Length: 518
Image 1 (cartoon, one colour):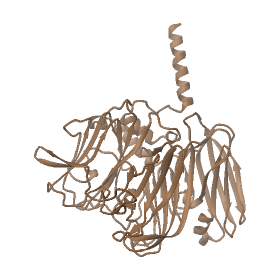
Image 2: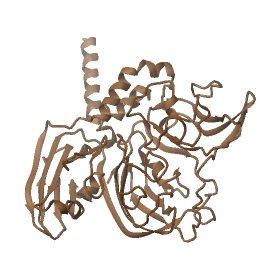
Image 3: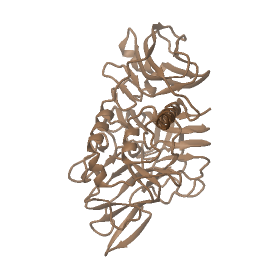
Image 4: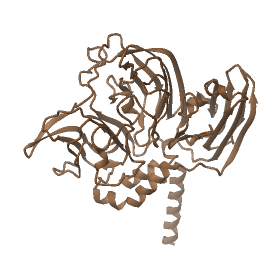
Protein backbone atom coordinates (compact mmCIF):
# COMPACT_ATOMS: atom_id res chain seq x y z
CA UNK A 1 0.00 0.00 0.00
CA UNK A 2 2.84 2.37 0.84
CA UNK A 3 4.53 1.63 -2.50
CA UNK A 4 1.27 2.22 -4.39
CA UNK A 5 0.72 5.52 -2.59
CA UNK A 6 4.28 6.59 -3.43
CA UNK A 7 3.64 5.77 -7.10
CA UNK A 8 0.38 7.70 -6.96
CA UNK A 9 2.07 10.77 -5.47
CA UNK A 10 4.88 10.56 -8.02
CA UNK A 11 2.31 10.37 -10.82
CA UNK A 12 0.43 13.41 -9.51
CA UNK A 13 3.73 15.34 -9.27
CA UNK A 14 4.55 14.52 -12.90
CA UNK A 15 1.09 15.69 -14.00
CA UNK A 16 1.52 18.95 -12.07
CA UNK A 17 4.91 19.54 -13.64
CA UNK A 18 3.52 18.92 -17.09
CA UNK A 19 0.54 21.22 -16.54
CA UNK A 20 2.88 23.89 -15.24
CA UNK A 21 5.08 23.70 -18.30
CA UNK A 22 8.25 22.82 -16.40
CA UNK A 23 9.13 19.48 -17.92
CA UNK A 24 12.69 19.83 -19.21
CA UNK A 25 13.20 23.08 -17.27
CA UNK A 26 15.57 21.78 -14.63
CA UNK A 27 15.71 23.49 -11.25
CA UNK A 28 19.40 22.64 -11.14
CA UNK A 29 21.13 24.58 -13.88
CA UNK A 30 23.71 22.52 -15.74
CA UNK A 31 25.39 22.69 -19.10
CA UNK A 32 23.13 19.85 -20.26
CA UNK A 33 19.95 21.60 -19.08
CA UNK A 34 20.94 24.79 -20.91
CA UNK A 35 21.76 22.90 -24.10
CA UNK A 36 18.35 21.22 -23.99
CA UNK A 37 16.67 24.56 -23.34
CA UNK A 38 18.25 25.95 -26.53
CA UNK A 39 16.23 23.55 -28.69
CA UNK A 40 12.92 23.74 -26.80
CA UNK A 41 10.58 26.06 -28.71
CA UNK A 42 8.15 26.07 -25.78
CA UNK A 43 10.70 27.13 -23.15
CA UNK A 44 10.66 30.82 -24.12
CA UNK A 45 6.88 31.01 -23.69
CA UNK A 46 7.16 30.62 -19.89
CA UNK A 47 8.57 33.13 -17.43
CA UNK A 48 11.92 31.57 -16.49
CA UNK A 49 12.19 29.35 -13.46
CA UNK A 50 14.72 29.63 -11.91
CA UNK A 51 14.55 33.35 -12.70
CA UNK A 52 17.49 35.12 -14.33
CA UNK A 53 18.25 38.64 -15.47
CA UNK A 54 20.43 39.36 -18.48
CA UNK A 55 23.81 41.06 -18.39
CA UNK A 56 26.50 42.03 -20.85
CA UNK A 57 30.15 43.02 -20.53
CA UNK A 58 31.59 44.77 -23.55
CA UNK A 59 34.43 46.97 -24.76
CA UNK A 60 32.17 50.01 -25.28
CA UNK A 61 33.89 53.41 -25.04
CA UNK A 62 34.08 54.33 -21.33
CA UNK A 63 33.71 58.01 -22.20
CA UNK A 64 30.01 57.20 -22.48
CA UNK A 65 28.80 57.99 -18.97
CA UNK A 66 25.37 59.58 -19.27
CA UNK A 67 23.09 60.99 -22.00
CA UNK A 68 23.43 64.45 -20.47
CA UNK A 69 27.23 64.41 -20.44
CA UNK A 70 29.82 64.78 -23.26
CA UNK A 71 30.96 61.47 -24.74
CA UNK A 72 27.60 59.72 -24.87
CA UNK A 73 28.20 58.94 -28.56
CA UNK A 74 31.92 58.23 -28.14
CA UNK A 75 32.95 55.51 -30.59
CA UNK A 76 36.31 54.18 -29.39
CA UNK A 77 34.71 50.82 -28.58
CA UNK A 78 37.93 48.83 -28.26
CA UNK A 79 40.43 47.59 -25.70
CA UNK A 80 38.31 48.76 -22.77
CA UNK A 81 38.63 46.51 -19.74
CA UNK A 82 37.31 46.40 -16.18
CA UNK A 83 40.77 46.32 -14.64
CA UNK A 84 44.29 44.94 -15.07
CA UNK A 85 45.73 42.24 -12.80
CA UNK A 86 49.36 41.21 -12.35
CA UNK A 87 49.54 37.42 -12.22
CA UNK A 88 52.81 35.49 -12.12
CA UNK A 89 54.71 38.28 -13.83
CA UNK A 90 52.26 38.99 -16.63
CA UNK A 91 49.25 41.26 -17.09
CA UNK A 92 45.73 39.94 -17.49
CA UNK A 93 43.17 42.43 -18.74
CA UNK A 94 39.81 41.61 -17.16
CA UNK A 95 36.85 41.54 -19.57
CA UNK A 96 34.28 40.04 -17.19
CA UNK A 97 34.26 39.69 -13.40
CA UNK A 98 30.85 38.50 -12.29
CA UNK A 99 29.56 36.86 -9.12
CA UNK A 100 27.36 33.82 -9.49
CA UNK A 101 25.18 31.96 -9.81
CA UNK A 102 25.12 32.58 -13.53
CA UNK A 103 25.98 31.33 -17.01
CA UNK A 104 27.89 32.57 -20.03
CA UNK A 105 25.50 32.30 -22.97
CA UNK A 106 27.05 34.35 -25.81
CA UNK A 107 30.68 35.38 -26.37
CA UNK A 108 31.47 37.64 -29.33
CA UNK A 109 34.90 39.07 -30.15
CA UNK A 110 37.03 40.37 -32.98
CA UNK A 111 40.41 42.00 -33.64
CA UNK A 112 43.15 42.54 -36.25
CA UNK A 113 46.01 40.53 -34.71
CA UNK A 114 45.30 37.63 -32.37
CA UNK A 115 48.50 36.78 -30.47
CA UNK A 116 48.02 36.23 -26.73
CA UNK A 117 45.95 34.10 -24.33
CA UNK A 118 42.28 34.20 -23.43
CA UNK A 119 41.37 32.67 -20.06
CA UNK A 120 38.10 31.76 -18.35
CA UNK A 121 38.08 31.19 -14.58
CA UNK A 122 35.20 29.72 -12.59
CA UNK A 123 34.26 29.87 -8.89
CA UNK A 124 37.34 31.86 -7.81
CA UNK A 125 39.68 29.07 -8.84
CA UNK A 126 43.16 30.61 -9.37
CA UNK A 127 43.66 28.24 -12.31
CA UNK A 128 41.62 28.88 -15.47
CA UNK A 129 39.30 26.16 -16.70
CA UNK A 130 39.69 27.36 -20.28
CA UNK A 131 42.82 28.73 -21.95
CA UNK A 132 42.57 29.76 -25.59
CA UNK A 133 45.98 30.47 -27.18
CA UNK A 134 44.71 33.36 -29.28
CA UNK A 135 42.12 36.14 -29.39
CA UNK A 136 40.06 33.67 -31.40
CA UNK A 137 37.20 31.57 -30.00
CA UNK A 138 37.60 29.04 -32.81
CA UNK A 139 40.83 27.89 -31.09
CA UNK A 140 38.99 26.63 -27.99
CA UNK A 141 39.97 23.08 -26.99
CA UNK A 142 36.47 21.76 -27.66
CA UNK A 143 34.28 21.01 -30.64
CA UNK A 144 31.13 23.10 -30.09
CA UNK A 145 30.02 22.61 -33.70
CA UNK A 146 28.98 25.02 -36.48
CA UNK A 147 25.75 26.20 -34.83
CA UNK A 148 27.38 27.08 -31.50
CA UNK A 149 30.72 28.44 -32.74
CA UNK A 150 30.37 30.75 -35.73
CA UNK A 151 33.26 32.53 -37.49
CA UNK A 152 32.17 35.96 -38.68
CA UNK A 153 31.59 36.67 -42.35
CA UNK A 154 34.82 38.70 -42.31
CA UNK A 155 36.87 35.98 -40.59
CA UNK A 156 40.35 35.35 -41.98
CA UNK A 157 42.18 32.25 -40.67
CA UNK A 158 45.52 33.96 -40.19
CA UNK A 159 44.66 37.19 -38.41
CA UNK A 160 41.75 39.58 -38.98
CA UNK A 161 38.20 38.81 -37.91
CA UNK A 162 36.28 37.27 -35.06
CA UNK A 163 33.72 34.69 -34.02
CA UNK A 164 30.74 34.12 -31.74
CA UNK A 165 30.43 31.27 -29.23
CA UNK A 166 27.02 30.13 -27.99
CA UNK A 167 28.20 27.16 -25.92
CA UNK A 168 26.56 27.70 -22.49
CA UNK A 169 28.92 27.73 -19.50
CA UNK A 170 27.15 27.83 -16.11
CA UNK A 171 28.89 28.72 -12.84
CA UNK A 172 27.83 28.50 -9.21
CA UNK A 173 29.86 31.26 -7.55
CA UNK A 174 31.91 33.39 -9.91
CA UNK A 175 33.19 33.85 -13.47
CA UNK A 176 36.14 35.86 -14.71
CA UNK A 177 37.35 36.25 -18.30
CA UNK A 178 40.75 37.77 -19.02
CA UNK A 179 43.08 38.54 -21.90
CA UNK A 180 46.88 38.38 -21.81
CA UNK A 181 48.37 40.21 -24.77
CA UNK A 182 51.49 38.74 -26.36
CA UNK A 183 53.07 42.18 -26.15
CA UNK A 184 52.11 42.45 -22.46
CA UNK A 185 50.61 45.82 -23.41
CA UNK A 186 47.54 46.25 -25.60
CA UNK A 187 48.75 47.20 -29.08
CA UNK A 188 45.84 45.93 -31.17
CA UNK A 189 42.13 46.81 -30.88
CA UNK A 190 40.30 44.22 -28.77
CA UNK A 191 36.55 44.25 -29.24
CA UNK A 192 34.26 42.01 -27.21
CA UNK A 193 30.71 41.39 -26.01
CA UNK A 194 30.01 38.75 -23.36
CA UNK A 195 26.36 38.00 -22.59
CA UNK A 196 25.53 36.18 -19.38
CA UNK A 197 22.62 35.17 -17.18
CA UNK A 198 22.42 36.29 -13.57
CA UNK A 199 20.36 33.78 -11.61
CA UNK A 200 18.70 34.69 -8.34
CA UNK A 201 20.70 33.86 -5.16
CA UNK A 202 20.56 30.27 -3.97
CA UNK A 203 19.91 28.91 -7.47
CA UNK A 204 21.61 25.55 -7.70
CA UNK A 205 24.14 25.57 -10.54
CA UNK A 206 26.70 22.95 -11.52
CA UNK A 207 29.79 24.77 -12.72
CA UNK A 208 31.13 24.17 -16.22
CA UNK A 209 34.15 21.90 -16.67
CA UNK A 210 35.94 20.83 -19.80
CA UNK A 211 35.58 17.23 -18.66
CA UNK A 212 31.80 17.47 -18.51
CA UNK A 213 31.66 19.37 -21.81
CA UNK A 214 33.57 16.57 -23.53
CA UNK A 215 31.27 13.98 -21.98
CA UNK A 216 28.31 15.78 -23.54
CA UNK A 217 29.66 15.57 -27.09
CA UNK A 218 26.65 13.52 -28.20
CA UNK A 219 24.19 16.08 -26.84
CA UNK A 220 26.20 18.94 -28.37
CA UNK A 221 26.16 17.22 -31.76
CA UNK A 222 22.40 16.76 -31.50
CA UNK A 223 21.87 20.42 -30.57
CA UNK A 224 23.93 21.47 -33.60
CA UNK A 225 21.83 19.30 -35.89
CA UNK A 226 18.58 20.69 -34.51
CA UNK A 227 19.68 24.33 -34.63
CA UNK A 228 20.94 24.02 -38.21
CA UNK A 229 17.95 21.98 -39.42
CA UNK A 230 14.93 22.90 -37.27
CA UNK A 231 11.95 20.61 -37.74
CA UNK A 232 8.67 22.12 -38.90
CA UNK A 233 5.65 20.87 -36.96
CA UNK A 234 3.13 19.16 -39.22
CA UNK A 235 0.87 17.33 -36.75
CA UNK A 236 -1.96 19.33 -35.25
CA UNK A 237 -5.06 21.26 -36.24
CA UNK A 238 -4.66 23.23 -39.45
CA UNK A 239 -6.13 26.67 -40.11
CA UNK A 240 -5.97 27.87 -43.73
CA UNK A 241 -6.33 30.95 -45.88
CA UNK A 242 -6.11 30.63 -49.67
CA UNK A 243 -7.55 33.59 -51.52
CA UNK A 244 -6.89 36.77 -53.45
CA UNK A 245 -7.27 39.89 -51.32
CA UNK A 246 -8.45 43.04 -53.04
CA UNK A 247 -6.88 46.41 -52.18
CA UNK A 248 -7.86 47.68 -48.73
CA UNK A 249 -9.48 44.33 -47.89
CA UNK A 250 -8.67 41.68 -45.25
CA UNK A 251 -8.69 37.88 -45.09
CA UNK A 252 -8.95 36.16 -41.71
CA UNK A 253 -9.12 32.75 -40.09
CA UNK A 254 -9.98 31.73 -36.54
CA UNK A 255 -7.72 29.26 -34.76
CA UNK A 256 -8.88 26.29 -32.63
CA UNK A 257 -10.60 27.27 -29.40
CA UNK A 258 -9.15 26.46 -25.99
CA UNK A 259 -5.60 26.38 -24.66
CA UNK A 260 -3.50 25.92 -27.78
CA UNK A 261 -0.35 27.24 -29.39
CA UNK A 262 0.53 27.97 -32.99
CA UNK A 263 3.59 25.80 -33.60
CA UNK A 264 4.04 26.42 -37.31
CA UNK A 265 2.99 29.28 -39.57
CA UNK A 266 3.54 29.38 -43.33
CA UNK A 267 2.74 32.41 -45.51
CA UNK A 268 3.05 32.72 -49.29
CA UNK A 269 2.50 36.03 -51.08
CA UNK A 270 2.18 36.33 -54.85
CA UNK A 271 0.61 38.36 -57.65
CA UNK A 272 0.31 38.25 -61.43
CA UNK A 273 3.17 40.73 -61.67
CA UNK A 274 6.19 39.15 -59.99
CA UNK A 275 8.11 42.42 -60.18
CA UNK A 276 5.81 43.82 -57.48
CA UNK A 277 6.76 41.24 -54.83
CA UNK A 278 8.93 43.65 -52.83
CA UNK A 279 6.10 46.14 -52.61
CA UNK A 280 3.53 43.47 -51.72
CA UNK A 281 5.62 42.09 -48.85
CA UNK A 282 5.61 45.57 -47.29
CA UNK A 283 1.96 46.43 -48.04
CA UNK A 284 0.52 43.10 -46.84
CA UNK A 285 0.14 43.32 -43.06
CA UNK A 286 0.07 40.30 -40.78
CA UNK A 287 -2.14 40.71 -37.70
CA UNK A 288 -2.53 38.08 -34.99
CA UNK A 289 -4.83 38.35 -31.97
CA UNK A 290 -4.71 36.15 -28.89
CA UNK A 291 -7.56 36.06 -26.39
CA UNK A 292 -9.17 39.17 -27.79
CA UNK A 293 -6.07 41.37 -28.00
CA UNK A 294 -3.88 42.00 -31.02
CA UNK A 295 -0.23 41.10 -30.35
CA UNK A 296 1.23 41.04 -33.84
CA UNK A 297 1.00 43.78 -36.49
CA UNK A 298 3.76 43.73 -39.03
CA UNK A 299 4.41 43.64 -42.79
CA UNK A 300 4.77 40.05 -43.85
CA UNK A 301 8.29 40.47 -45.22
CA UNK A 302 9.58 42.20 -42.10
CA UNK A 303 7.94 39.64 -39.81
CA UNK A 304 9.92 36.95 -41.59
CA UNK A 305 13.25 38.58 -40.69
CA UNK A 306 14.07 39.00 -44.37
CA UNK A 307 13.15 42.67 -44.55
CA UNK A 308 12.35 44.05 -47.99
CA UNK A 309 12.25 41.66 -50.91
CA UNK A 310 11.70 38.21 -49.42
CA UNK A 311 15.35 37.18 -49.60
CA UNK A 312 16.20 33.64 -48.42
CA UNK A 313 16.77 33.23 -44.70
CA UNK A 314 17.57 30.17 -42.60
CA UNK A 315 17.47 30.55 -38.82
CA UNK A 316 16.20 28.76 -35.75
CA UNK A 317 12.84 30.52 -35.43
CA UNK A 318 12.26 31.53 -39.07
CA UNK A 319 12.90 30.44 -42.63
CA UNK A 320 12.33 32.11 -45.99
CA UNK A 321 12.74 29.56 -48.74
CA UNK A 322 14.24 30.16 -52.17
CA UNK A 323 10.72 30.25 -53.68
CA UNK A 324 9.56 32.84 -51.14
CA UNK A 325 7.63 30.75 -48.60
CA UNK A 326 7.81 32.40 -45.17
CA UNK A 327 7.94 29.98 -42.25
CA UNK A 328 7.64 30.87 -38.57
CA UNK A 329 8.44 28.40 -35.79
CA UNK A 330 7.73 30.82 -32.94
CA UNK A 331 5.47 29.08 -30.42
CA UNK A 332 2.43 31.36 -30.00
CA UNK A 333 0.23 30.24 -27.08
CA UNK A 334 -3.21 31.42 -26.03
CA UNK A 335 -5.86 30.42 -23.49
CA UNK A 336 -9.18 30.58 -25.34
CA UNK A 337 -9.27 32.16 -28.79
CA UNK A 338 -6.96 33.41 -31.53
CA UNK A 339 -7.19 34.66 -35.10
CA UNK A 340 -4.85 35.46 -38.00
CA UNK A 341 -5.54 38.21 -40.52
CA UNK A 342 -3.80 39.49 -43.64
CA UNK A 343 -4.66 43.05 -44.61
CA UNK A 344 -3.88 44.35 -48.09
CA UNK A 345 -2.94 48.00 -47.62
CA UNK A 346 -1.65 48.27 -51.18
CA UNK A 347 -3.27 49.42 -54.42
CA UNK A 348 -3.30 46.05 -56.19
CA UNK A 349 -4.68 42.60 -55.45
CA UNK A 350 -2.50 40.06 -53.68
CA UNK A 351 -2.81 36.28 -53.53
CA UNK A 352 -2.25 34.78 -50.08
CA UNK A 353 -1.74 31.24 -48.83
CA UNK A 354 -1.55 30.74 -45.06
CA UNK A 355 -1.25 27.55 -43.07
CA UNK A 356 -1.15 27.57 -39.27
CA UNK A 357 -0.65 24.36 -37.32
CA UNK A 358 -1.83 24.44 -33.68
CA UNK A 359 -1.34 21.99 -30.84
CA UNK A 360 -2.64 21.74 -27.28
CA UNK A 361 -0.63 23.88 -24.85
CA UNK A 362 -0.26 23.76 -21.06
CA UNK A 363 -1.19 27.32 -20.10
CA UNK A 364 -0.43 28.46 -16.55
CA UNK A 365 0.34 31.62 -14.59
CA UNK A 366 3.88 31.73 -16.05
CA UNK A 367 2.72 31.60 -19.70
CA UNK A 368 3.27 34.61 -21.95
CA UNK A 369 1.91 35.86 -25.26
CA UNK A 370 4.04 36.24 -28.37
CA UNK A 371 4.41 39.81 -29.71
CA UNK A 372 5.84 41.34 -32.88
CA UNK A 373 5.96 45.10 -33.39
CA UNK A 374 7.01 47.06 -36.50
CA UNK A 375 8.31 50.61 -36.73
CA UNK A 376 9.36 52.57 -39.80
CA UNK A 377 11.00 56.00 -40.11
CA UNK A 378 12.10 57.67 -43.32
CA UNK A 379 15.38 59.57 -43.63
CA UNK A 380 16.74 59.01 -40.16
CA UNK A 381 19.75 61.35 -39.82
CA UNK A 382 23.15 59.62 -39.68
CA UNK A 383 26.05 61.55 -38.16
CA UNK A 384 29.72 60.90 -38.88
CA UNK A 385 31.07 58.92 -35.92
CA UNK A 386 33.72 61.52 -34.99
CA UNK A 387 31.42 64.53 -35.52
CA UNK A 388 28.59 63.60 -33.20
CA UNK A 389 27.05 67.01 -32.45
CA UNK A 390 23.36 66.56 -33.12
CA UNK A 391 23.58 62.76 -33.22
CA UNK A 392 20.45 60.86 -32.24
CA UNK A 393 19.44 57.45 -30.96
CA UNK A 394 16.68 55.77 -32.94
CA UNK A 395 14.29 53.90 -30.66
CA UNK A 396 13.45 50.47 -32.06
CA UNK A 397 10.86 49.79 -29.37
CA UNK A 398 9.70 50.74 -25.89
CA UNK A 399 7.69 48.10 -24.04
CA UNK A 400 5.69 48.55 -20.85
CA UNK A 401 5.02 45.51 -18.71
CA UNK A 402 6.72 42.21 -17.96
CA UNK A 403 8.29 39.84 -20.44
CA UNK A 404 11.33 38.59 -22.34
CA UNK A 405 12.84 40.39 -25.34
CA UNK A 406 13.87 37.84 -27.97
CA UNK A 407 15.30 39.79 -30.85
CA UNK A 408 14.71 42.02 -33.83
CA UNK A 409 15.03 42.51 -37.56
CA UNK A 410 16.60 45.73 -38.83
CA UNK A 411 15.82 46.60 -42.45
CA UNK A 412 17.54 49.70 -43.84
CA UNK A 413 17.53 51.60 -47.10
CA UNK A 414 20.83 53.47 -46.97
CA UNK A 415 20.91 56.70 -48.98
CA UNK A 416 24.71 56.95 -48.60
CA UNK A 417 27.45 55.13 -50.46
CA UNK A 418 29.20 54.35 -47.17
CA UNK A 419 28.64 52.46 -43.94
CA UNK A 420 25.82 53.67 -41.70
CA UNK A 421 26.10 51.22 -38.77
CA UNK A 422 28.85 52.53 -36.48
CA UNK A 423 26.37 53.18 -33.67
CA UNK A 424 26.03 51.05 -30.54
CA UNK A 425 22.88 49.32 -29.35
CA UNK A 426 21.63 50.33 -25.89
CA UNK A 427 19.15 48.10 -24.07
CA UNK A 428 17.47 49.42 -20.92
CA UNK A 429 15.53 47.28 -18.46
CA UNK A 430 13.24 48.24 -15.58
CA UNK A 431 13.78 52.02 -15.48
CA UNK A 432 17.57 51.85 -15.88
CA UNK A 433 19.30 55.18 -16.46
CA UNK A 434 22.34 53.45 -17.97
CA UNK A 435 21.87 50.53 -20.36
CA UNK A 436 22.55 47.06 -19.04
CA UNK A 437 23.52 46.11 -22.58
CA UNK A 438 25.83 48.62 -24.29
CA UNK A 439 27.18 47.48 -27.65
CA UNK A 440 30.14 48.18 -29.89
CA UNK A 441 28.53 48.68 -33.32
CA UNK A 442 25.55 47.50 -35.35
CA UNK A 443 27.32 44.66 -37.15
CA UNK A 444 28.75 43.40 -33.85
CA UNK A 445 25.28 43.13 -32.35
CA UNK A 446 24.22 41.00 -35.32
CA UNK A 447 27.06 38.50 -34.81
CA UNK A 448 29.53 39.64 -37.41
CA UNK A 449 32.35 42.21 -37.51
CA UNK A 450 34.02 44.69 -39.84
CA UNK A 451 31.82 46.66 -42.20
CA UNK A 452 30.50 46.83 -44.83
CA UNK A 453 28.83 43.47 -44.33
CA UNK A 454 28.34 40.55 -46.70
CA UNK A 455 25.51 38.03 -46.64
CA UNK A 456 25.57 35.33 -43.97
CA UNK A 457 23.23 32.82 -42.31
CA UNK A 458 23.32 31.26 -38.84
CA UNK A 459 20.74 29.99 -36.34
CA UNK A 460 20.52 33.21 -34.32
CA UNK A 461 21.80 35.98 -36.62
CA UNK A 462 21.59 36.63 -40.34
CA UNK A 463 22.24 39.22 -43.03
CA UNK A 464 19.84 38.13 -45.81
CA UNK A 465 20.16 41.27 -47.91
CA UNK A 466 23.04 43.62 -48.83
CA UNK A 467 22.52 45.32 -52.18
CA UNK A 468 25.97 46.88 -52.65
CA UNK A 469 29.50 46.42 -51.37
CA UNK A 470 29.54 50.00 -50.08
CA UNK A 471 26.25 49.34 -48.17
CA UNK A 472 24.16 51.62 -50.40
CA UNK A 473 20.56 50.53 -50.87
CA UNK A 474 18.70 47.83 -48.99
CA UNK A 475 20.39 46.06 -46.08
CA UNK A 476 18.76 43.65 -43.64
CA UNK A 477 20.09 42.22 -40.39
CA UNK A 478 18.27 40.05 -37.90
CA UNK A 479 19.18 38.56 -34.56
CA UNK A 480 17.00 36.40 -32.36
CA UNK A 481 17.87 35.70 -28.76
CA UNK A 482 17.80 32.27 -27.17
CA UNK A 483 19.59 31.71 -23.85
CA UNK A 484 20.55 35.39 -24.14
CA UNK A 485 16.94 36.61 -23.99
CA UNK A 486 16.48 39.79 -21.95
CA UNK A 487 13.97 39.58 -19.10
CA UNK A 488 12.19 42.70 -17.86
CA UNK A 489 9.65 43.21 -15.07
CA UNK A 490 8.32 46.73 -15.66
CA UNK A 491 9.68 48.06 -18.97
CA UNK A 492 12.17 47.59 -21.79
CA UNK A 493 13.72 50.04 -24.26
CA UNK A 494 16.01 49.46 -27.24
CA UNK A 495 17.91 52.41 -28.73
CA UNK A 496 20.45 52.43 -31.56
CA UNK A 497 22.98 55.23 -32.08
CA UNK A 498 22.68 56.56 -35.62
CA UNK A 499 26.35 56.94 -36.53
CA UNK A 500 28.19 56.18 -39.75
CA UNK A 501 31.29 56.96 -41.76
CA UNK A 502 29.72 60.11 -43.22
CA UNK A 503 26.77 62.41 -42.66
CA UNK A 504 23.60 61.34 -44.44
CA UNK A 505 20.27 59.57 -43.99
CA UNK A 506 18.73 56.11 -44.03
CA UNK A 507 15.18 54.76 -44.01
CA UNK A 508 14.97 52.43 -41.00
CA UNK A 509 12.47 49.68 -40.20
CA UNK A 510 12.61 47.53 -37.07
CA UNK A 511 10.61 44.46 -36.14
CA UNK A 512 10.97 43.45 -32.50
CA UNK A 513 9.95 40.09 -31.04
CA UNK A 514 9.11 39.38 -27.41
CA UNK A 515 6.92 37.36 -25.06
CA UNK A 516 4.93 39.21 -22.45
CA UNK A 517 2.19 39.20 -19.84
CA UNK A 518 -0.95 41.35 -19.94
